[in-house]
Amino acid sequence: MKSIIVNAYGGPEVLKVKNVEKPVPKSNEILVKIEATAVTRASVMMRTGTPYFGRLFTGISKPKVKTPGTDLAGTVESIGSEVGNFKVGDKVMAGTTLKCGAYAEYICLNEDDMIVCQPENISHEEATGIMDGGVTALAFFTDQVSIKAGDKVLINGGSGSIGTAAIQLAKEFGAEVTAVCSGKNKTMVQELGADKVLDYTKNELERSSELYDVVFDTVGKMSYGKTKKHLSAKGVFLTPVLELHILLSMLFISPFSKKKLKFAATGLRKLDLRLRDLKVIQRMLATNKLKTVIDKVYSLDQIQDAHSYVDSGRKKGNVIIKVA
Ligand SMILES: NC(=O)c1ccc[n+]([C@@H]2O[C@H](COP(=O)([O-])OP(=O)(O)OC[C@H]3O[C@@H](n4cnc5c(N)ncnc54)[C@H](OP(=O)(O)O)[C@@H]3O)[C@@H](O)[C@H]2O)c1
Image 1 (spheres, rainbow, N blue to C red):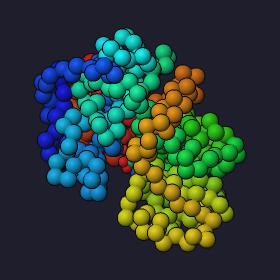
Image 2 (cartoon, protein in one colour):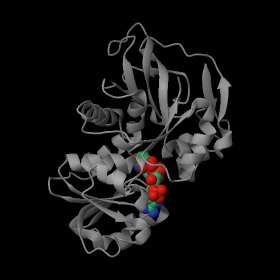
Image 3 (cartoon, rainbow, N blue to C red):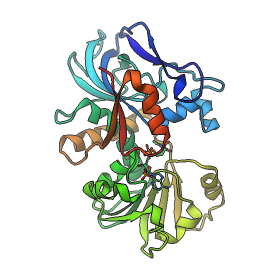
């Protein structure tokens, strides 16, 4: 079968298309024919080996796992003798986190891994595309803050993978949502439900005096120090990006401050929590309460181009690799 193989950290050129042996499922595993996978920021971080502390998980001098890719959608082709949760022909969506392996034509997954059946109303591309942003945004909104109807939520990077999902989820929780993006993405974020849109290229947030209960900087472009003045009395600043300035702010924030700063590495959470969130995402997709924003679709052979595009930092929503 075709698989992407990496032997070193580096630019998109380290991603090579190779022929490898098709895996055979063990008794508790399912063999999935992968139809689509996604190029996420996490897969870029794993490819480059940056930030360096991430190498504690992915391998110090070179990647421990040879086939990258953390999200996939596909069809169960065969099952091990003890598998009870899935049957041949099921269309599934799955997240492999640090085990990776999704940039390939086939993968074997333990049936108890982070896998659910795809809702019938969505494509393989939509199923794999929502895994990263949807599960991450939901984890922040359930584990780090609990948004109530009427809360004012600001989402910076509303046009990205986490941002496009976060806007829809915050609206679903009943929040009043302000999205921050560039002018070219204004219509898209409005269509996803944003009540107000601020253009970051025109510094519109800096000139605003509105206060927010939650500021979710999905793209790690804001500092806590400068954003504090936009938080309500008990406001929370959320970030999925652990920059040095965020770490320092976390260390030096007064324990008496009612305003909070929270970071989480959602992919490193326990399986039961990730699966819980994926099931919520699955239900929301099935009832058309959540949709996947897809920017570009590439083939497995175009993996280097797909990574170069994601490296640009300009993607809208999600970048998909159509494998089959
Ligand atoms: N901690 C966790 O659990 C976790 C999980 C998943 C991802 N992450 C991290 O979260 C970050 C975001 O991931 P993502 O996939 O959502 O990002 P992304 O999709 O790559 O973000 C791209 C978007 O960001 C916008 N953008 C760029 N600069 C901006 C700025 N200064 N202000 C506002 N928007 C800006 C771009 O719009 P324009 O083209 O208009 O600039 C583009 O649409 C990554 O660093 C990723 O590694 C963390």
